[in-house]
Picture 1 (spheres, helix red, strand yellow):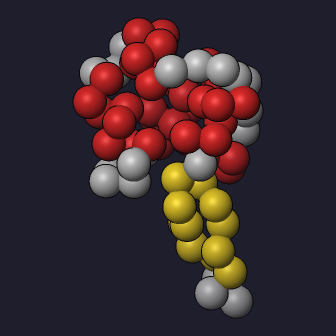
Picture 2 (picture 1 turned 30 degrees about the vertical axis):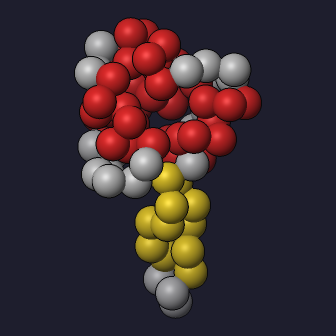
Picture 3 (picture 1 turned 90 degrees about the vertical axis):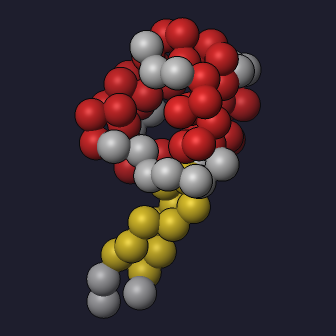
Length: 70
């Protein structure tokens, strides 16, 4: 049994905090387009960005993605 990264949950975490992608970009220092790429699963969130995002959204890094058992 192994674990794999599933779909990005950033869209749901932003909604839970009633925060826009633009607001997350402003608060983390990343460009809005980059945040959009993460939200729409076009690129994985780098580890260091995940730390910043988790801090701003007051969640654990593990919550940023679904976990799939393979």
